[in-house]
Amino acid sequence: MPIFLDTASIREIERFLEMGIIRGVTTNPSILLKDGVAGGIKSVKAKSIEIAKMIAPYPLSVEVTTNDPCMMLQQACDFAGWANNIVVKIAIHGPDGELENLAVARQLEEQRNIRVNVTAMMSAQQCFLAALAGATYVSLFGGRVNNMGYNSCDEIKKLRKVLDDFELKAKIIVGSTREVLNVIEWLEAGAHFVTVVPSLLEGMIVHPYSKETVQTFLADAAKSKTVPKSG
Ligand code: E4P
Image (cartoon, rainbow, N blue to C red; front, side, top):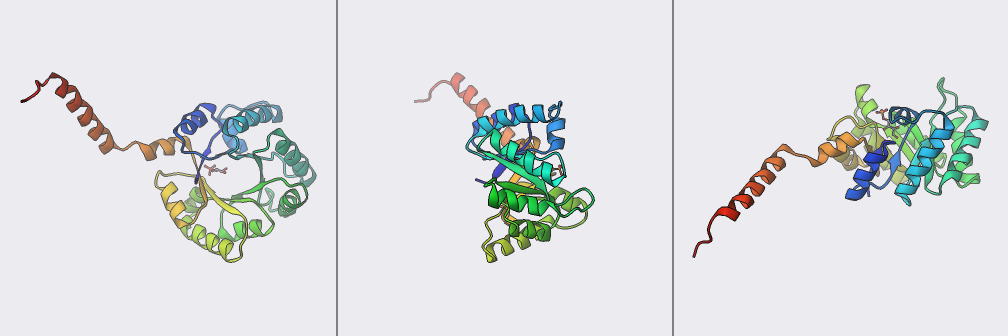
């Protein structure tokens, strides 16, 4: 099932879980901040445990909040201990292009048996290398790719082809949704999952012409109660 919810809002997660249309949740430090998670790691832990429990056995991605390799390893082990369905997000590289992150990802996957989602990627080539390092998930930021003037669908197609050709286990998550259309177009291009912000998921369901049609049906049903039976 291909849709994750990109949020830390319990209300939104409940709403879409109940509808049966999401199969996982992704967060990042900006999403947590926007959804009111303040107070550092203690609050991240409380919120993550709450979400992980709600959505189990579906995965919850939680991102490390440091770029120091030893601290990333330590945090990743802590996060993974909070719940079985937590996947740890590690950025493709540090804020200044530091290259230790993929080694951290590999160590977590191979030696600690922790599932890693390598994140903040803008190209198929970055995702390919993260997949070679052993990541379970590779996150391409489709909306940001488009905003830079590149075509996210082209990157997804290329990436899916090399992952399949080389039989790599990594699954592609495309995030950074900006338009309702993104979900279908990215899945069609080859994404295994699209992680969607709640407002866009709602936009996929509600259509003005469907509204009008339902209004007509309900109005006619009401009228038929007052029309005498013929024959
Ligand atoms: C998901 O894993 C990403 O963190 C998220 O979709 C990024 O979205 P943004 O580009 O809107 O910040």
